[in-house]
Amino acid sequence: MTVTLFPIRLLIAAFMMLLAWPFAFLASVGRTEISVEPQCLWRRLVDIILKIIMRVMWFAGGFHWITVKGQRALPAEAPILTLAPHSSYFDAIPVTMTMASIVMKAESKDIPLWGTLIKYIRPVFVSRSDQDSRKKTVEEIRRRAHSGGEWPQIMIFPEGTCTNRSCLITFKPGSSSIISFISLGVPITDYSFEDCQLAMAEGQLRLPVDTCLLEFAKLIRRLGLKPQNTEKVLQEYGNRARKLEGQKLGLDDFAQFLDVPVSDMLRDMFALFDEHEDNCMDIREYVIALSVVCRPAKTLETMKLAFKMFEAEEDGAITEMELAVILKTALGVSHLSVSRLFTAIDSEDTGKITFDKFRYFVEQHPDFAEEYLHTENIGLHSSPRQGHQIKASLSCLNPHDTATSKTANGICPDFSPKDHDGTIYGLLKKHN
Image 1 (tube, helix red, strand yellow):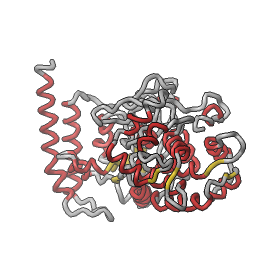
Image 2 (cartoon, one colour):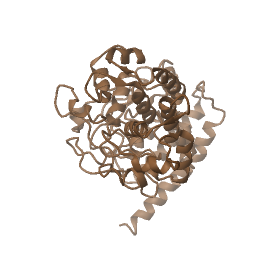
Image 3 (cartoon, rainbow, N blue to C red):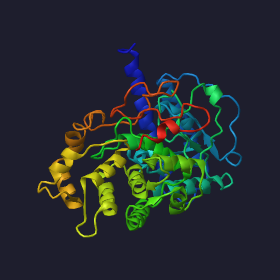
């Protein structure tokens, strides 16, 4: 059948997509992002034609009969439709059957042919890497939802990315969480798309297997501490931390620095940085960890910020011990030796290095972490890059939500608490 029937099916599906393109293009001409055009007779006719074309395409793809249970609510009654999990391209079937708008990544509109069909259903585009874009997306969804049924319904996949259906990952804030996990019959995990972005980031420093930064990122999200204006907030935190000159902060001072009340989750975060278990922490380490979580691929920007907080006033340089603290925090590990790296950078044997020296060394040795840190720290494991093409995946999780194998870069171990009281004591000391 692969030789005889499959080419015919593929040809029909491709032809249906080509046939749909001119209808979608004509119906999209003259549209604006601010208001919805009146659904005149010819536009309704195009809508029906496109639904028929798409149904024939799915029929050719093997979906001969599709059973629909219940009755679809009107846009005025239910402006938002929630689906989960999102696991394949076949999840587009309910979209083409309803012609509902969807929330999707901005890059999708540039896909040849398919991009025109996507734009026809008036999606809400979001850039995953742009914090401002996410805020605008929420505002746009809210605006359409309160239009009284004027806009088409919005179909949301609240996980925000495609998974392998073995578990449900963290839903995006603002999306409906009223999903029946027991009919689905799959476990849930605290992982989110942002966790995989952090784990798979292509910066010079790639997170090791036992990093605690995934746990830190989780607490940042739960406490609502991830800034909207990342660069501005990090620079402000950096300046304030620099003025403290390494002064240790207690829990109350830490809460005051962040302008949040003391809570159990804040105590958990504080414990990540309480190195000697003496109820105090160095706020500079928090700023470094936050920088890595917010911009994981910008290693030099994080290092520049760290140097600014640690450097001496007289010469703008840091010592080997200070470099160890910076890199240990940036990698989220408990111990790290940087002797070989520091000696290689400090070629003049001054006992100190500046950010300019560090940057020059990194430019000459882009794989400095593999060459100097991983060889000196045997336990600092991270898998080699596979042709620099890393895909976020949750395939390392089994149905019991535990790590069973490494992903493409050896990251995404299970950081979920094993007890049932919500504590994470076993994880708290991984950072220090």
